[in-house]
Length: 120
Image (cartoon, rainbow, N blue to C red; front, side):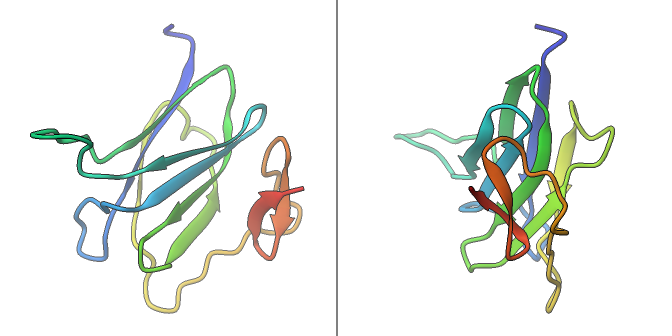
């Protein structure tokens, strides 16, 4: 288990708090896209950790996409050394746009379309 790869993503609001309702999608090299929703809990007296955790085995994340409930989003490639870490993603500044280059590798079954990873 210690040799398996993982990634934890913490999306933040414009005020720096945990972004409840945000959708985090990790596009991986081998197994496609994995999505997690940051929610408050799923039952009576239940609270969930506001972190998107991806257990990846021997796979690696190529591109990370975070979408907030108001429609704002950030799409970026994962930098070398970010696997097996906690990545915090800040809410985009006013007018900030994140667009992937057309030659970005999105992972198995995906390609860049209109600056974002999309299915083939």
